[in-house]
Every structure is written in C-alpha cells, then in structure tokens.
Image: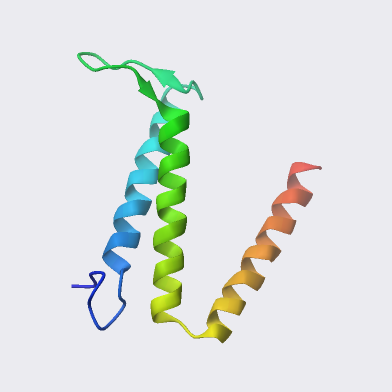
Length: 96
C-alpha cells in the first residue's frame, strides 16, 4: 500500500523508507561524534559524508515525487512558504 503506483498517497512508502535511511546515517554521525570516516567491527570503512549526501538526495527526490503526485499546487506553495519561514528562523537562531 502507498507504493509508487498506488492511487492514494502515491510514493508515501518510498518517502518513509528514504527518511529512515537518512535517520540511520544521522544516528551514525551522532554516535561517532561527527566523524565522517568510521570503521565498524568486521566491516569495511564507511564514509558517512558520502552516505549523508546520498541519503539527503534520496529524501529530497522522494519528497518532491510525493508532493508532485499527491498535493495541489496551492498546497505545494504552502509547503515552500513554511520551509522558507523555517530556514529564516534557523538562520536567526544560528546567528544569535
């Protein structure tokens, strides 16, 4: 249900999956004190910066697909307005 081809909430499952994969990378970054090159026991080195870029791209792509396929242009504009407001707020907080 909610697959890339479903009639209702098309792509919701993929969007959720991609967010979960990004969350895993973020958790690994936190767990490793922000170090981007880590080696886990019995595993090859992992480049968390490369994975972060990959997973952010996947989330943005799945989000764009989800919005395009399920929401109206007005709703998409409301989302962008809200995102712009958040960015401005984060900028204010980061410069405080």
